[in-house]
Image (cartoon, rainbow, N blue to C red):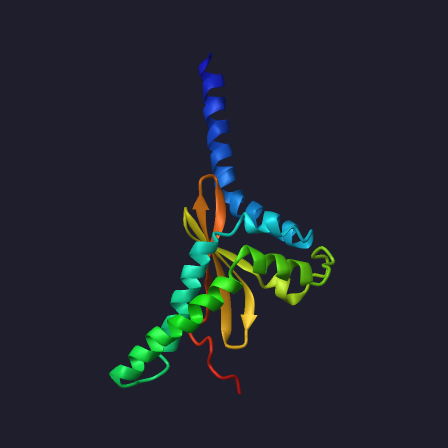
Length: 172
């Protein structure tokens, strides 16, 4: 093999790796959107690490319940462990393949994303590290919610949902 061919081969491999590194998060999001639009809950669920999402959401909700203001030690104890008794089963039901199937089956038909709504234009992806990125689309009453993704092999899986710091605050 000549030097020129070897150089071209190495350059092609580097370009392929860099291209996949840049494009793979977008590819994952496109495939998730396509699965949701096709109402294919199994394919959509394949991009979600349900145990990680449950654990992440559970921890956030318990922290929110515990920090709802100063309380004597016994009230803080009841909040922390009482919240766990209430939150754990709810999160287990809501963050599951079965709940995803139900949500996908009940979702209204999509126009394929051709409407160009403000919500679609305001979504954004932020790379936090080579193995982690977040997507911010949801505009909640008290802030924004993020979907967190981590690299799993050559692909990506959703591992968390970041709720805003003031999630659960009363909306006037």
